[in-house]
Image (cartoon, rainbow, N blue to C red; front, side):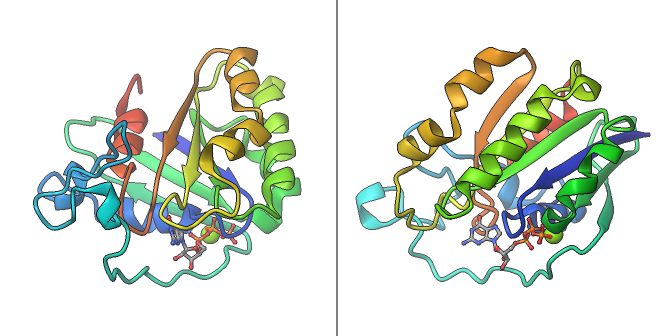
Length: 199
Ligand SMILES: Nc1nc2c(ncn2[C@@H]2O[C@H](COP(=O)(O)OP(=O)(O)OP(=O)(O)O)[C@@H](O)[C@H]2O)c(=O)[nH]1
Ligand SMILES: [Mg+2]
């Protein structure tokens, strides 16, 4: 069994990822919905391709979630994966106990809400703790910059600067970054690919 720890401040989108991956399958349209380098989405004709036309203006309902007070565990079935994969989300309010789960983790996914400028300093200092942890020294970490569909009071480029993303990436190997919108499933295919790599 492979355990993937999913952590990050409250409300950043962890539970929504688990919800999406629970029903993830190869035929899903969403699997083709990958963010392009220029921020466009390659989605079979159901979305405007011109960024100027407003990529995220479709009326899409976000599935309801509740704050995770404790731990939320979800088994995921990814095609061609011989391993049982378990995603273990620990709620943002449980940040003080995240550490207790580091030892059992094969990989870590760390969520940041890039639309929440008031949370960025908490998000960043917790991220530095995660990246600097001895228990996670050889463990791959994926930083998910989520909610890119929302209007950030600070732009995404500035957010990355405030988080100190370049410094974090230089600090150690095995750190990857995905920009995502759980609402529109942008980047979810990239997350699945990262999960499946080198298990
Ligand atoms: N617009 C938008 N809303 C999102 C996105 N991801 C999550 N949300 C919404 O943000 C809210 C919080 O999402 P959750 O998935 O519950 O956040 P969480 O990280 O699990 O939070 P805790 O369990 O409290 O730690 C919910 O209303 C989600 O529907 C996103 O990419 N875009
Ligand atoms: Mg949650």
